[in-house]
Length: 232
Image (cartoon, rainbow, N blue to C red):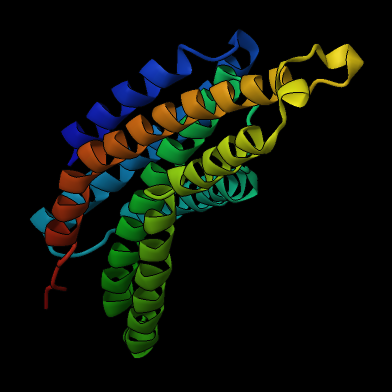
């Protein structure tokens, strides 16, 4: 599990290196926090498997990791939800959106893994609340699954925008399409926008394929490894 998280980290590094330096330095902090939390969760999970119970130290570390992961998951999800893929102005903006999508995916997977461990914690510490925790987990799984589908279909909006731009160009008469913009032509800016949308579409499709490649085995491993039965 930790090796797979590290592979995702390298993917994020590759994307981050294409961004503006100031943004990269800022985002490095958030990704560093996220990956540190993932290492803590991995260690807590491993110790629980070995020892059969959670110590006070493990509970504290898990709570701190949970705080960071929840905060970062909400941040990246907000960024994804508020971005309009059809309103792109350049490749850098598309790359930034793809970076946010990868980070949102990683943080949501880690958040779900913590939620599984929380069930085990309540079995040990608050057995009367365990049933409620399981119901919360089921609700979280449903919400996260819907969000993953959203991340894997961000290119749909771009494809629709491309079709609309193509139709707009086809509907222009000769003068509108080919005369210079300063005398009423609309073709040049429309062509420029269409070119940007096509580049964004290709980049976003590659990002969606990358998410599927990077996270499919991680999710499968997460689901398998998170079926941890509390020890008596």
